[in-house]
Amino acid sequence: MNLMMYHCMLIVTDGDIHDMTQTTDLIIELSKYPVSIIIIGVGEDSFDKMKQLDSDDRVLRGSKGQSALRDIVQFVKFADFTAKGMSALAEEVLKELPDQIVGYMLANGIKPAKVDFHSAEALMMQANIGAHLVSRL
Image (cartoon, rainbow, N blue to C red; front, side, top):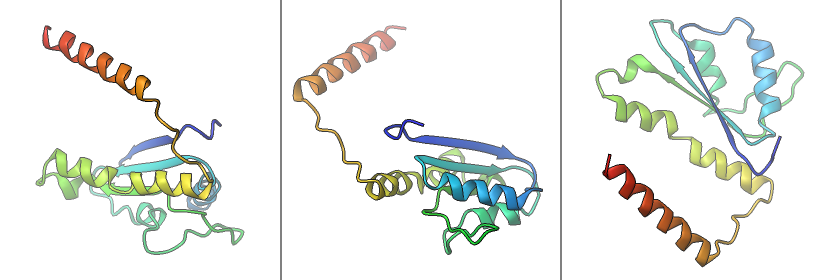
């Protein structure tokens, strides 16, 4: 796994977990790596086990006593946001992601790369050209 690349897994589920021990152990193992997991629960299930995986208020512990190095799971129940709209759902789904990314980077001593001014200028020019082309469609 490229440690300079961060991965985000999106899981959409209509039910709770049936293999909680294995899932918990896997999440604890993944907490070492540049990974976040977003789980969206759809339907009327209680999703109690999903809420346990989203360990905002405690450290996630595995079957052998191992602890997650960091919280990498965000669980959101879709039904809680149907009246609030898609933008509220999107905000909640992505709420923890910046802290998870920064937490991983800090824990592993990864600092932002210096941006070459000329490279940044070239990117801005490309973005402006791309925006111009899209506006013509």
